[in-house]
Image 1 (cartoon, rainbow, N blue to C red):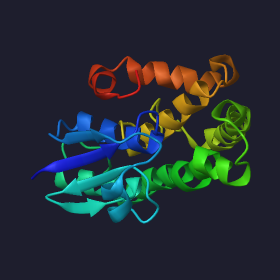
Image 2 (image 1 turned 90 degrees about the horizontal axis):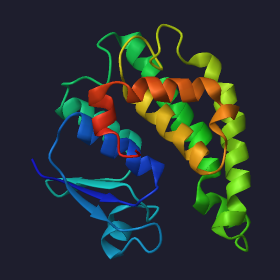
Image 3 (image 1 turned 90 degrees about the vertical axis):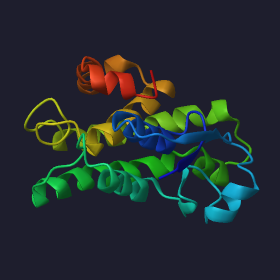
Length: 201
């Protein structure tokens, strides 16, 4: 099986999948296309002309949730999901909270659509505020059973949550404003396999 992964630096949807690929020690070819013109190949295979784009033996997938589920199915070890059906649904619930309810509205391309005159620096405070508000809203649903996001093991939910938290920090939110998330991040980074596979250090 040959995996080709089209990526852009600082794109947190891409970072999610890189983390999964690394954690499961899957071999892949990485192609960095940047955040601007993604090129004809990505435009051809992604309906929204954006990364991530993953090709498996030449067959494209263009959404990170689809990629995450596919990776778990082709490489179930080490697991990033539970075997219990309800626990699996809870992991997906948190992933979708990040993927559908938090991430899209702060995305630079979304903000640029409504404010094409803004520079990247001018976008940062608006993006950061949105993330801060919604990470606060998400927090009561996390860490109920352990220091992991859902249940008692490292899952896709941890990857989605911690990547969007690091995006908030990158956009200027002080770690002291989200202390529980920072404690969580430090816990994850204390685990060797998790830290060594993380693409955002």
